[in-house]
Amino acid sequence: MLKNRTTTIASVVSILLAASAARPAAQVSPVEASTEPHGKLLARYCVSCHNERLKTAGVMLDQVDVAHIDQNPAVWEKVVRKLRTGMMPPDGRPRPDTQAYMAMVSYLETALDQASADAPNPGWPAAAHRLNRAEYTNAIRDLFGLDIDGRALLAADDTGYGFDNIGDVLTISPGLMSRYMSAAAKISRQAVSDPTLPPGTMM
Image (cartoon, rainbow, N blue to C red; front, top):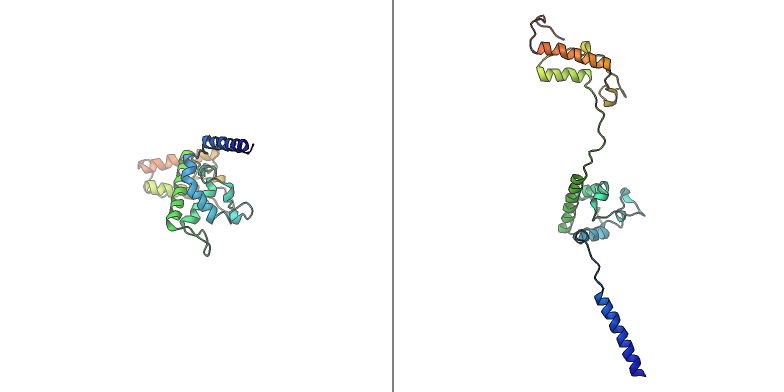
């Protein structure tokens, strides 16, 4: 009886061992494998402060994936700036060795560059606007060597917050466009030395 029980137990154990051996090992993607050292470095030296509970400097590294930098590029930009200048980890805290540290910086910079190339994000374009009178006057002088009186040729510029060079207020109406076209015609005549203009004419 004891012999039969022992044989049965041995058979069960053999079956379990065989099943365990037959089960495929967990597959690790190439990306995960290549970023595993960086993940360990962050977990050891950074996440203790920069996590969802403490939110130090508003950075929560336990909520982002170092294997997928493109998913949270703004966070990793903050991280790499601090690492590049040697500001993190702060003085008095454990730090990785120089080789691992620089490898982390290099990885982040390369991954961020790739993410930017794959999905460019130039931000919101500034409002298209015209030159104000002073800018127009300076541009004509620089391009043609002519001194013109922008105040006589063009209408007064609107201002915003006390400035006349803010794009949002430098719009152009049909009437103002007509003034610019008229000014351009006069300036072009002077630029080519139109003989119909009196000598020494200044605009």
